[in-house]
Length: 86
View 1 (spheres, rainbow, N blue to C red):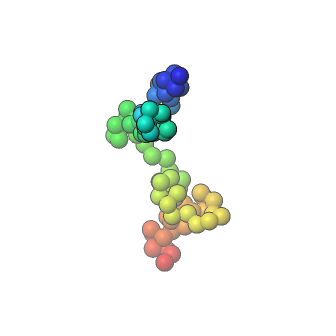
View 2: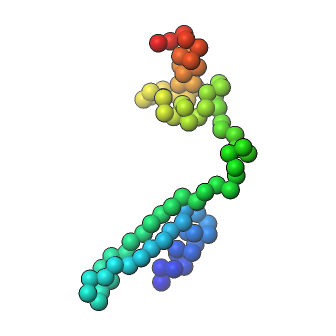
View 3: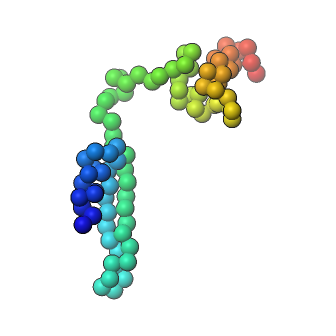
């Protein structure tokens, strides 16, 4: 009964799902699910990270301050790298 859903997830989603059942006595009492993210087929050489003003999105997402726009964060990070900010 659960297999069609598991097969759909494994086929169409960015995740794979494995499941097992746990029993207490003769009754199934728990369903255990393990979700793993599928690996991207592209090699790192073929992927290009997006940037704003020459600053990578991943860097902006880690260093942005609350309420700051992506553009504001990119400008601040770029200025800091150039030594204009402390």
